[in-house]
Image (cartoon, rainbow, N blue to C red; front, top):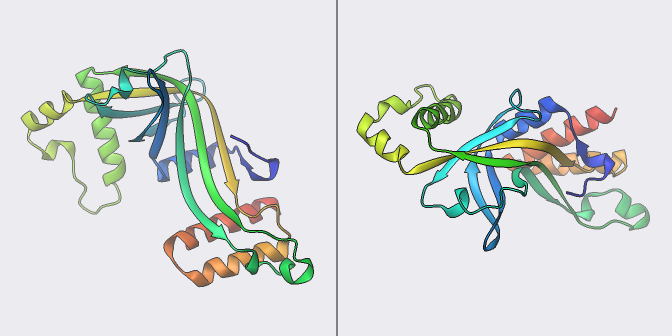
Length: 214
């Protein structure tokens, strides 16, 4: 991924939090039919392996788990808030007119080598971890044990676990850092005034990026 220095994000704690908050990844693999992308919720454990490990599962009917080039890295793409930025927002437009539209966004690319597993104990551990992680936001979280055991056993036979041992992790926070302060402030104002959830998420990220610079 092309990452200008101004947009680079490499702080481990920031990347970890981003993946946790945006855990549905587009996993890109090289198959016998060419490049393939599948969308898979993944958990990230940085303390495992050299760079961390991503784990998830796919349907056994999905050829992704058996038809991939094991000598080539796979790529998991995690995307966050994104927003079109109009040049009309910039005070610089009135001064010299040398402004153009752009797009602000946040993304993490995780590269690594994928392995698969279908050991029942590991699959059950993974399902519990995934469920507990995403149900934690609810007052009365659903548990894997809430479903009948024969039903869960049948479903586990229909999935295959995937594990991606990372070789590199790249973050790109394109948040108007290359614009003058007055233009960044104007972008923040327009995002705040729009008031929708995505705009407010982008506003928070933009404010954090500017805070980091100063």
